[in-house]
Image (cartoon, rainbow, N blue to C red; front, side, top):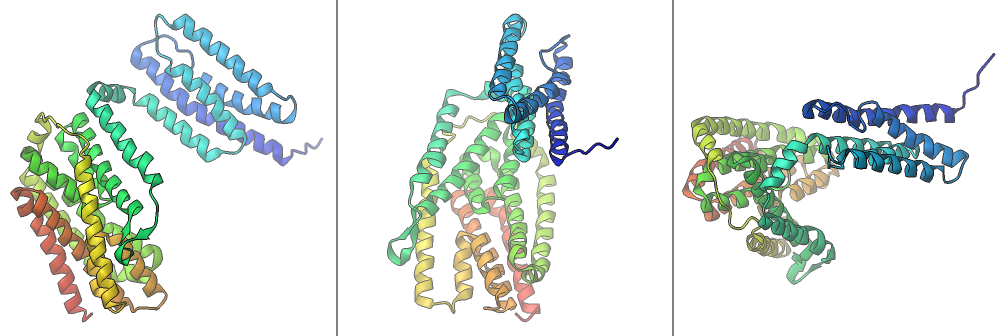
Length: 426
């Protein structure tokens, strides 16, 4: 006897297994929670959650193929069963986390049937992460004050409400101003400022280095500005701020390589030696400064600091104004000098942003509109220009400690680029 299995059957079997695996991930965390809380039983654990996700998939299949409305009947039955259990166990476990997780698990099964595999997998991981981070999240919530909540509302107003309403259009002399672009810079600064504050409140000043590491992926300029101001206002944070800024500068070097490689591998190959050489020297200085100030860094993490204004909107707007002024100067010079001033344009563009000029020169060199040598010099000039400008921020807004200890990083990139251009005859 020969069984002819249709492709639809194979797909359904795969979906059942996939849904069961997602439920198993969530159930594993819930079962582990039983052991931590020393409870004998929980409403749903490592076996029940896979059943729930598969139940969602099969209910959707039955509704789609056989019985209209069965999905709603099945979900209604799950709700009744969950609410009944919640009522019976409320005296011993007043929380509703597991119950809400069961509803979401059922929905995961529905998503799997409709082939939203990535979304369902992401949601399963997200749910499990929230469940597993219960102790850390509760600890963090206890440290959040009313002032923090107000700061969060301000941040949401700046990033979520105002930004989409602004026009994405150039205007003014030389079309130098763009409100949406300027406000994006304000959001970047605000994000770094607010995340730094939350890290300090949660884990202490030592966590500022994470702000530099993560913020460097967004804007090393904004990191330099923000942490320099914090070090000046709170000198006890100077060592942590130095560590964070130096890491942000290092990350920027690798970002240049990635962006150039995305469009023109030949350009990236030419940039590899000077950028990696400067980065290796940066790492050496970072390690030396870290070992030299390790004791001080540990003391900073133990120091209790009261921040009066966690969301400095005025400072963020100030940064946006400076950005707009420099953008105006860059556009004006480009108009008067024309396209021949590639190097000057690179220097001016680097003051604001390395990414844009890197991508532009990569594209022009890939199309053969400029020589690879010109593109290499242009990118390196932009990198040096950006570091000079960041050091200018540190010098103006930071303290003497940062001015002294960040100077080696600036000198390294200037010397490496200068020697590379000189010995290669570019």
